Image (cartoon, rainbow, N blue to C red):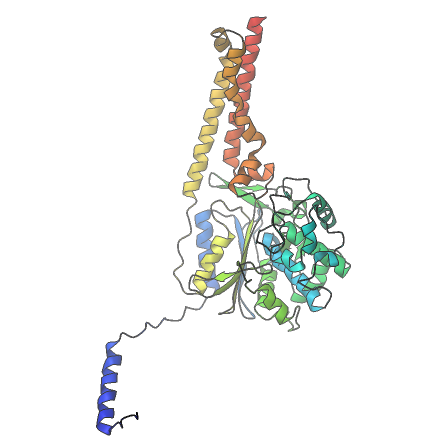
Length: 489
């Protein structure tokens, strides 16, 4: 069978028909390019967010390619000084991406292999579980080692002060899963990785970061600490209580390698530029190879956690490489948008109650991608809840005082004996909640470890109500038992 020839007349009819068909089909919408992001638009979003949430101070860096669009501070520190682009602030778990970069530098140098066992470089690393011998360097960085807060308590256990102490303390811990079997966010993964850097490089972790990461990138003010005691006064944060920011020291915790980096908006802008420029420093010299850097940003075969970064998408479907961070009194966020070359860092000196750095960071991503930036959440509803809990606390205190004062009358109406004592036992029920509040919070957070003091910081008004209620119940119980014993005597 052969094709029939097409005459000029037939071709003309065909062209006209196709033209009519094309004109009849609605044209695809043409999206206007996002308006340019500048310092003024960034300032507007940040200040509106601070006004709505009451966060005392924030530092923000926005970059595009090698350009710093904005690096600035807003509000005040815990000591009352203005936050600037040079104010040192805690970056919390953004530190994990820094630790991952340090490891990848050693990979570049041929001194570490990602898929080699950790014990090959860190012989002191041992656990009470034979499966730990199979944990690789990659397992630490992508948080699939099998270590877990459910089998090793990094916060409620004894406080460690050095990376060496952390690794030594793991000898009595077991794994919650086989290495590589599943993702589980666990801070000691990165503490072990930091100790590995120390051992392979032959120098303290802080010294290594200063010489090989911070200095080459021009991050001249950045450093890292080990515990909450290393936070300078200006870097301390706040908890929000009844709509008021209360400056507080960070509860004791160890964070070297996993959450100990202190930096500024100025320095974090340099960090973003390097991340979006194939690992090159301000003079164009690579701090890490492009291939090694790309490995940290690569989505794993399963899950979304790369090597110190989370891999996902923006609301518009564009690639997003980011990470959140949070101590108890501060929050942090960083994001890379590879398609547009933008980078965002937000540091906030308040805990995540009424608003936080990741929430503002998401709004800045909306601004960059040309979406309508939604209004910041109001702090009023949560502030009213706090006020309600404080009023309940006053009421509980009043009832406790009245119960103690009326204990004599109560005892006179009851016959002393076991039956009367049994009736008093319910007064002991609130006491375990006061003694072990961190266990309740850990259960609510699906096994994440937390200390008693951290639990009190997280829920200050609830903790106060619980303390007044539990101690008031004990006071009433003691007063009534005492009155009964006196009556019997």
